[in-house]
Image (cartoon, rainbow, N blue to C red; front, side, top):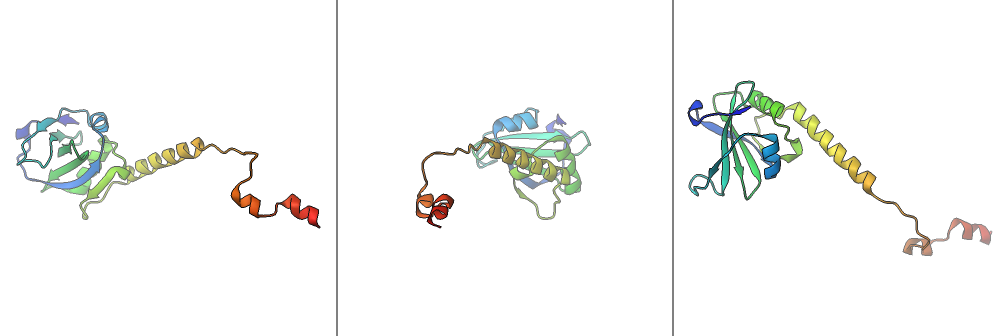
Length: 156
């Protein structure tokens, strides 16, 4: 992927997808220069924008809202959005769990869902392994109200 010049795309674009990312994730996953957009008539919040040409050929327009942390991906209206989205996800590893909206007629790539599932699984495994289980000598409230196996055996 590379940053494209503004005159390389002369076609109208439409929003296809929105995802929540931190600014550090944005710069890691999309390592191209973004232009600052501070015009309140152009964007509802301070925004960064970039025209990107993907390695596979299609252009994408990216807007990143600094306050909301939301990345909006726009694609040329005359092109197949699902195919171009597959090319985008092939180059940019945004987990599917970060997508907050996508156009209903656009199919999300299977690779993105697999990658996102793997990310969630790794997170779950980390959480499960970090839980400490301790056995204390004190009795819990529930164990005091129930007869223990040893108490039941003594009564018999």
